[in-house]
Image 1 (cartoon, rainbow, N blue to C red):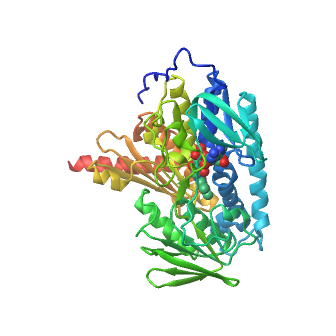
Image 2 (cartoon, rainbow, N blue to C red):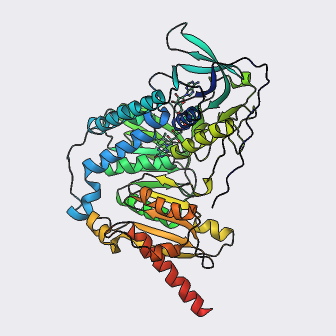
Image 3 (cartoon, rainbow, N blue to C red):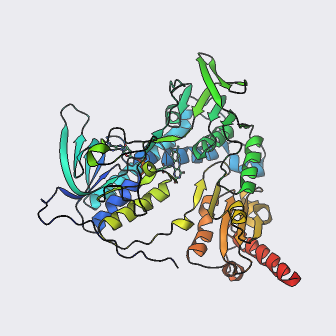
Length: 485
Ligand SMILES: Cc1cc2nc3c(=O)[nH]c(=O)nc-3n(C[C@H](O)[C@H](O)[C@H](O)COP(=O)(O)OP(=O)(O)OC[C@H]3O[C@@H](n4cnc5c(N)ncnc54)[C@H](O)[C@@H]3O)c2cc1C
């Protein structure tokens, strides 16, 4: 079980302090800001969220998670990619897929998500203040609307900064949002390019690389490091690379871009090694920058690092104890799911409510085609720490459900302690990986062992059955080891 932090000591205010407009003002309505606001409202606090017009739900809803995952779903459906194992490589649901086909679904989902968020804030009596926030002092925030002179100053006992990030744009590259763009620019593309260079093999870069490859775009990925996704299981990353190469993706690892030239006919990306890569479009996905430049944080007694990020302690408190910060603006892991949880925890801490933290079993989900997800340790981490483990593997092609859905490449890997049978890590590659990982996460979070999976009866035929097969594989190996000992 996980320890419960003792009730936090609320930040005390001098008795003579005037009653401020709000108990909490949250800057930014992305996942971190939303959950901080709702958590505080549920505690009976007076809360406001400041957000720019047209950005309700944050980067997550407007330009990041939701649009990219909806695009992926549209790509999977329209290309018939997931069914090609069953119906052949030439299987397509629609022959000439257009950007409009893809974006129609995206706009629909964004609209619905906006409605859900607005309704939730309203229901919980959270005021939504439209405009850009800027500190006046550590308790006062100016909200600047779009029209000239449209502004108000609100005061708050506590503040949560959840302003997120924007794509970093290297100064030597000229972005025209048509031929040279970043991940935001994907959402305003006019047509699907026949070829594309993706600069940066981080999560966002590789997710989009796989989507365009599935659409038939010839993709070249350029990455400065010798590898990609090196925080994931090495075997899973190998499988992913194999699949992407199969979709005609070319990788250029250990290579750096020296320049991009643009003409009406397309682009040429030049690498420091002298190679030149012609392509219709270049997408930069080379890191993100904290959105703090307009906040005037110095007026609140705060500072940011060179990448615009804010430093916090384990309770998400900044250097000024009544100002908290959560989400991408505080850096790693910069995921929507973790941002939400940070928001909830920050609000609880700010108002003296006990907090449970289970950060050590937070999952990672990478929505490439095919998808990747994991929770807990990797093999290389365990080896580095000299922690013994046994591996249990299940391959989808050996599961009835794997055959039914036409996934013959997926796999689930369990890392198990031979001494205690505790689950140390779960790694999934293939259909529904980002959903399946939660079974392992629940067992790890509750301190369970692989024995549960050996004994439990699971629905058949399901992909979840992979857990039972992998658990049996691991325990058989452990038993064999014990017989030799
Ligand atoms: C292409 C892409 C795909 C992604 N896919 C996934 C995924 O599959 N899964 C996942 O978990 N994560 C994913 N992420 C990351 C995820 O979107 C972020 O982790 C998450 O959005 C961060 O939430 P946040 O609370 O920090 O705020 P954000 O969502 O970044 O929103 C911050 C908000 O603050 C507002 N703001 C900034 N400054 C001010 C100001 N001065 N005044 C008022 N408002 C302000 C902005 O307008 C913005 O709306 C993806 C990101 C991108 C870019």
